[in-house]
Length: 87
Image 1 (cartoon, rainbow, N blue to C red):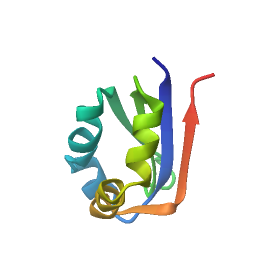
Image 2: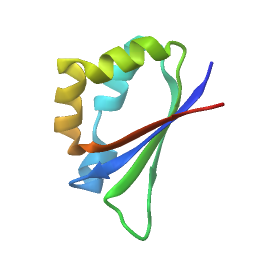
Image 3: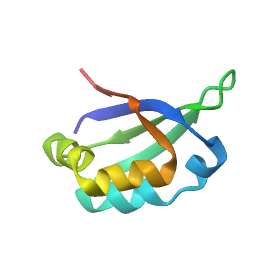
Image 4: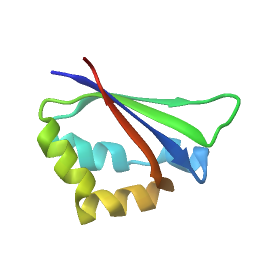
């Protein structure tokens, strides 16, 4: 199961950290061990680290309306999203 990092900018770090959306959208896909990170020098830069059993399902979610709604709710700036997969 690969570990995945997604890093991006957000409008409001505190709102993003408190959001239940990560668990709501990724949990049903079997994603586990979700951890969040914040750049202490620039708190609008954040990252999420998670273990992903099915990358195709996660990538499909990211391209879906539900994925777009979750990012909007969380204040993610989608044009800044970078996804890295454990090699």
